[in-house]
Image 1 (cartoon, one colour):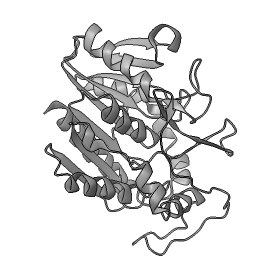
Image 2: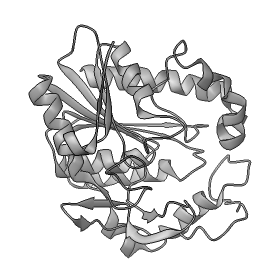
Image 3: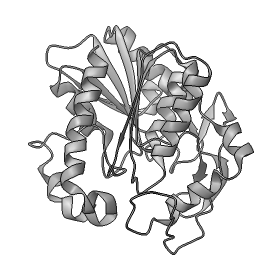
Length: 303
């Protein structure tokens, strides 16, 4: 496996490439989160390379030339990333994969830049949200995303509620959901703001795979994928669409990090189960969901 790193000053984006030794005419831009995230994008880029697919993980914040936090992140930087794969690496089949916050930017990249065969979003939200300042507690009053210098519409969740709130509307959820989950559901009550901020993957012309957990701890990704599916049906979207909602699924899902390379990450499973309650309660089921999701993703990219 071959690796290559990119920086904002020289390349126009911050990223990490994992390429199969023999190269590949298929590539996926992987969008997760910041440069120092608990689950860095390179782990998933390398996992794609295990299957003979070039992976290019692009960071959203936390590196020189990027915002310090998820706030006003430029979607434009995915243009040089895509051009590098096409023009330098000779990639003929290009996909974009976004997980959690990365789903926003995967959808926006497919929507505004285009030219992607596949859009894959895991544990997604259907709207951009308000950015946060580096303390990760203070909202910025700006959008998390910017396109060509223009802030994109967003919803404003109120995270001031520190105590967990139990929502009876979510079937089967036995624990108290976090203030983050509740804040997003409340933000969606402003239907005008939600409609204005709605992502439009139907403008991508890509085949779309959506994966969510019915008991997502961070936000209601099952609601989001259904909203996107509804929009696609409304416009009579003419490309393949597949929606998978795992019944006891956590926010954690998608590609499965390589067990040999990421032994430290797997040793953290008990700690992760504390942070992500659904994953902790339904660990066996969620590991099975991971395996199924990975199979679905790889097959989707290779079709």
